[in-house]
Length: 331
Image (tube, rainbow, N blue to C red; front, top):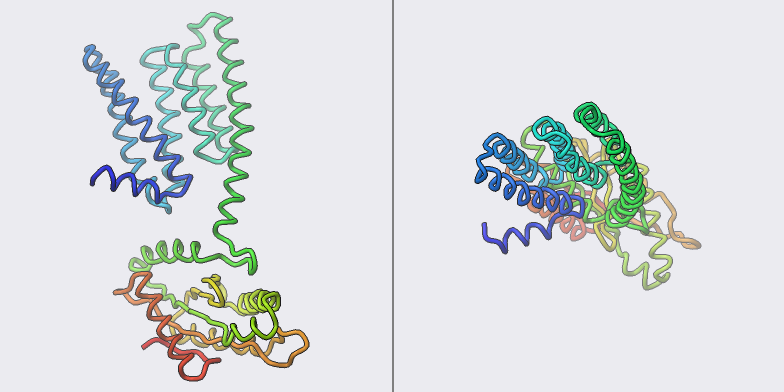
């Protein structure tokens, strides 16, 4: 893979993945250089240890670039740092204490704050148990004070960072009008589901739902009324979703639902959703009903997310061509 391909792949990662890959890459380069230096100095044992860490970093990177394994990758990284600190202290004594600071910072920016605090306490205990006996009292106090201060600073800034990241992630994945997961969430969920479905027998059906004559609603009643209709349709559909199903706002007047049922069961569920919506009055001061057309497609072993969606979308087009306000199953 060319450097340009690696850069393009890195830019596609979400912020948490990108930061983890950056940490691992930095550690990979730094420790590789250190291991090479020690090898040239004839320190074979330490060089082997460094290269073992490099190998672990390579494994972590493999997991880090896959969103479904990000939690595992971060915990592996923190585990490597913590175990590395302990082994370094065993190998070189109190000179290895400096590595505890790197592990401390990495943990606070890689895993949830509560877990990072626990890891910080474990690392401090390891340091005390491993080398405090050979240190002067003043050095023990100085190290402990610096470690606690660094932990406090890391805790504060990491807490704020995690809160802000959580807010931004929610804003990026949730449609503010309907409070449904948006297209980005759908794309991610379908990609993850497509990886799991071939290995499991549980059937799934995709629904593409479109509000009939929505442009006419906007033109006659205004965009504020159109927004109320969108929110009302989302609420009505969500209230009638089968257990385990997920509803998304795809964009405009389109919604998508993923139902963990076979096509016949999903078709009955779709009809129930369509009828329930038709019986809901969403236009203030007007008796006209808001209706939807629905296209369905069950997952096939030959499908990928794109082809699965296209089959359901084609069924939706046929439902609209045949008069709207109906459910159509893909051929």
